[in-house]
Length: 310
Figure: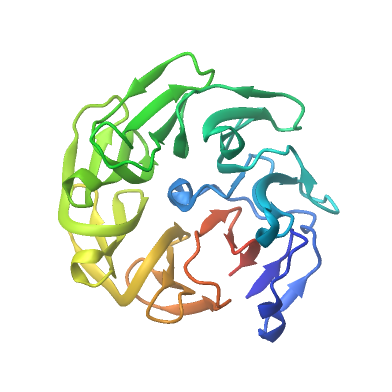
């Protein structure tokens, strides 16, 4: 396992790990790779454009003294990351010359920022969570801390902010968008897995299992099955071929290159991976940090503010 440390913050725990630390820059030609569909459900902490440039969130300042997650950019061959703006952000997406994100410095509203950091525009008034790029739209959950039926519903907004449409009336969490389908946990129905088309039609339940977290890849949903002790399961997006993959108690989940990455509450909340067929279970790292979001970009895992190359 290799750590590629882009940030200026290296956890002391790393000193005790038998791992190779590389300098704080990318190699001249980072491997090409897309952003996993489940990154949005993992807080959207990293994304990349077609030329291999990575945009990611990193802590600025001391977390115990009000440090904030701000947007950084690293281009292939750059000696160091560049901060793009002072906003505290989540849910990064890149499309063309713009970054789109939920701006926690402005009540979680959706903003867009030119990729050079020079122009910033608010495009939505809703407090938005799990913002996800889907073609010419951004799909998101209108976020509140309330649990009434009119809260935490799924919306979509055009990239220029001129059109906003509501897709459902369910209390929704854990948004995944694949092709023209939106997958989510329906808190209004006991955290069952549901799906709905991007045009708001064909809403349906996928399984009666209660889920804690899920990640969708192609025609398969990987999820932490609360109905069976949060063990790792897989099911087809049409509800068929339900199978248990691991007895590990699973929290955050993401997928890349045929592997499922997950935080394992059965083993100190360490980061593990397993093949999509349930074989080759392996510890990736144990940083002693508790369950944390897992983002995958350019064939690397962004975890606990470190880029890992498995």
